[in-house]
Length: 216
Image (tube, rainbow, N blue to C red; front, side, top):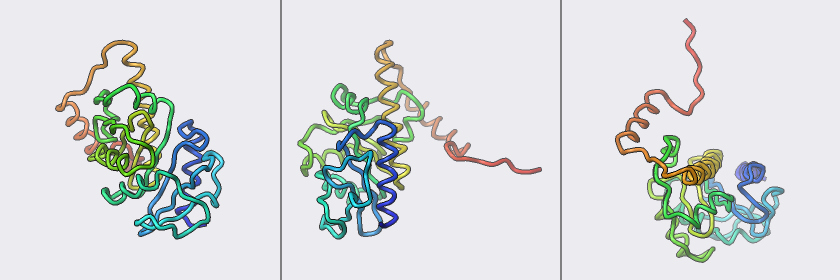
C-alpha cells in the first residue's frame, strides 16, 4: 500500500468516527504527483481497507487496484485540474447536507469561517457523477476551501489530506452554528472591515499554529 492509500484509509476512518461519513456515502482522494488515490465505489468508508483504495491518473485511467473507483471520480479530477490542491473530501455529513437543501449560501457569521475563504457557496444541483455537477462545484470553490452541493452534501479541499479533513469538520461545525443561530433570531454577519481586521490579526499572531515560547 502506498503512503497516499494509507492517508485515504486514515482520513475515512476519522471522518466516519466524527459522523461525517455514513455507510458508503461520500468519497475521499489525495493526489501524489500524476496519480490520485481515491476510494472505491460501494466501500463502507468507516471500515475502509487498503484494497478499497484505487489509483487513477489525472485523465481518469485506472492505474492501481482492482475495484471500480467512486462514481464521483470526475469531480475529484476536475478539482485537481482547476486548483493547486492535494486532497478532496466529499461527504454527506448530516448538518452540511441539511444546509445544502435549505440555504442559498452561508454568510460570514464567525471569524473562523474565514479559514474556508468567507461566504460558503452552494453549487446548484446536478445529478451525482456527472460533468455538470463537477463544473458547478468547481465554480463554487473559487477562492474557497469548501462548498455545499445543493440537495447533496459538501466538499472540502486542502493542500494536504489532513487539512481537507479539518476543513470538512469546520464546515460541518459552521453549518450547525448557523442552524442554531437562525433558530434564535436573525444571525449577525461580519462586515468587510471586520473580516479584514481578523485576517490581519491572524497573520500577525500566526493564528492556528502551535507556537513555543522563547527562553530568556
